[in-house]
Length: 456
Length: 76
Image (cartoon, rainbow over all chains, first blue to last red; front, side):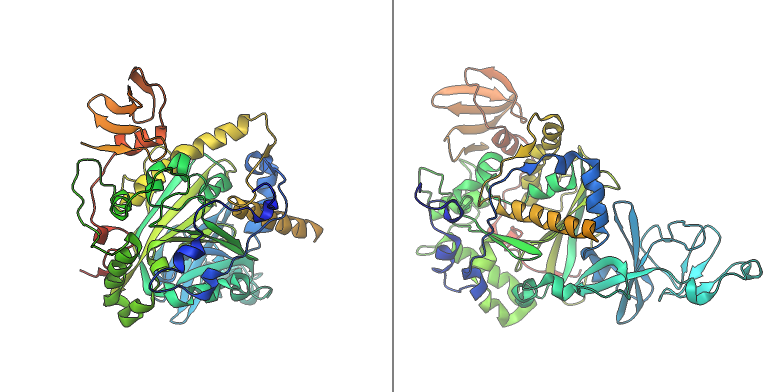
């Protein structure tokens, strides 16, 4: 290994590609391609997580500039439906203005600056509760109370401030730039990711569960806890029996990255070889002395067996398309990150994460977990978001299943990370070359955005 | 019994009345679910395994009930 250049070094053990290549149903060609990121091994400055000044730069050059997921289309299914999306000290209202159009506006009354809409609802006009100024759903001025006293208001220049909005995969994205400014479209921003996700029809899902939890940590501290598998041995050791951790594949693209974690294979760090049944029992958290609820049939592997069950479960929703869903898409963890903060898992893996600063704080964050599921028949209503405080576990709402318990393990690190960063004698974080390359790519992306904004 | 082996150290973590009993190469210690040592001659512990074994709720699931593999949702 010493002779291998640092950017080419990989863990011992089978690669994601070599495992997927042995499956009965193979994934798409892009899963057999690698796009590693390596731009050196320099430290990540600690101030990225602790400095108010850096947070303000992010606000100005990232959150005010880039495409970001605001809500699901299912949050505004009917004309007049509104949804509030807040980021840092900015508030936006998403509105379905007609059957085929979703708009987004700065959520501010043009009269005295009150936040216009406080919670989701269905409205004929957007009416400010303070004095009653009202705007049509397309943002045009609808009503001026005591108009005789406002001869200086002309309808044309008193419309709501509209920002850019577009929809991908049932997710409503906004870019907080004027609607008529142009610039990079959402499709351009997402790049190759659109093709990667095309087979999975994310717009055909509904929000089965939605939980948001507040952390006493910078938003990137929280997000970066979910951008590598290197931490599995330390934080989730119980998963090592059936999860390839250090042999995860990491790929980075212009505005997104992904991690492909092989499952149904043990960690290369183990010095013993579990059986297929032991890997299954690890997946189901069967303890010593307990009878497993299911046995892997003779001649099957955990991968092949789980893939069959997954396809059967999908068949009522997607019919014979289920036959084309690869084993890897059904059992491996394929986590994508659309920068800066949105993590849709691929295929039918249901999980979606979003990370944001909590309000305008650089030392508090919100992590949201949605489970978006296929459905049969009439679209069910999206689950309401359950909010958890800093000391409340993910398991409290009892809607995330075993995922909630795994997230609770992650949560033990997060607040303590911020405490450590704040008090650290170190000024930089020495991250790994490959396993933490998505985090390095994320920071390079931030640097590029901030530098470009400062030049302007 | 709610015991599980740590895949790396092969120490056994088992829920008991006092907390989590950790048996590692013949030495036994009892720890809280946060990994705080409570008693015994074993002081080495993985706090995350203590948490995994010592906190709930844990409901053994079938593969068909797992997030990835369970059936689609039908509106009631």
